[in-house]
Image 1 (cartoon, rainbow, N blue to C red):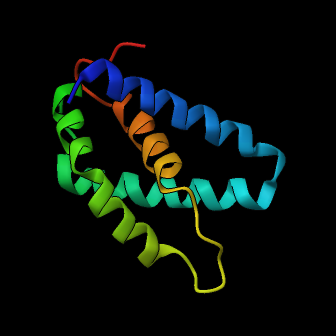
Image 2: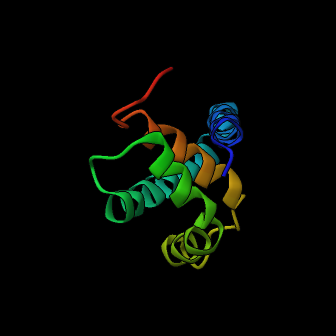
Length: 102
């Protein structure tokens, strides 16, 4: 996975999450589901990792993130944009990388 492309996608996800603030219910739901993805990242990547290792996990995230977000979403909740939730989660988690740079 191209590291710079991944970081751009993560940044876009975070910006889209921030843009949802005007709809409090939607924003709250997106934050909660992004947190679910972050928890899974902790399990998959660990607490000590590099950006490159995180990008490797991102390459397969479209499969596992969809499954865990669907499991975490309530029956009466509308579907969410999985790319937004996943990218925002990776953006936040990347800040914990050993080699993180803003």
